[in-house]
Image: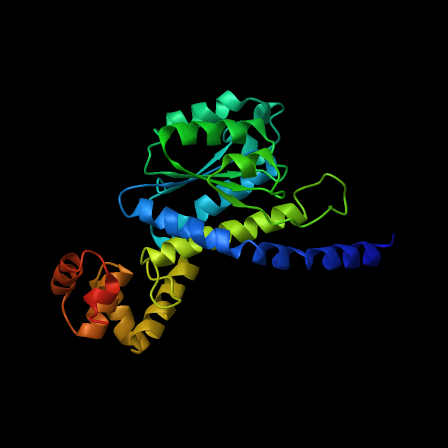
Length: 277
């Protein structure tokens, strides 16, 4: 095949991914509801995978703190072979189910936690070992696999199984299967964080300001949320110590930082309630 033919074929196959994920939406929504219920009483969201699946979990987990302003401990990504496996293959790491249990034990898995096992084949021993351990601990178990008849789908309490069909490069599940996993985790973490109040309308009200681009984005977000001009937004950001929630309360309610703190505390962190909306 010529390059153009290869790319057209890949593009044609990729169009099958979103409909496949769409057929699993009820299961994803059920998972979100159960994760939220556990997180509101102190639980965590933990992704477990090997190879490409593990890296996708680590990626989604690592994006949550800067996007939603949450602790790095709230959403965790565990990969067979540890940190080294994020950058390169660790041979045989995924073949030991006891390692999945060991890694969850290390982070002190509790019954309040939610464990998402990710494996395209649904047969990865590391992931199955983690799910079995999580079940024993009473944690919520969710399986993301490309087959609803796989061991992972059968073992987990909630099975999310986008069946995307054969890959154009036989056995390379980093393609359509990997894309479907990324879409599912996008939905899980984003919907969970929105349900927990880490967004205002469709704005990232709890985002971090780690660089100039993000500082500019924070200004834009506050401008959109408050309908105030740039000078007012910049002043509120400075006075609030660059805490977007406090700055928004100050801008919309016309109060000081100290008063905004009190209002937010009395509303138990519920921004809508703090704003009387």
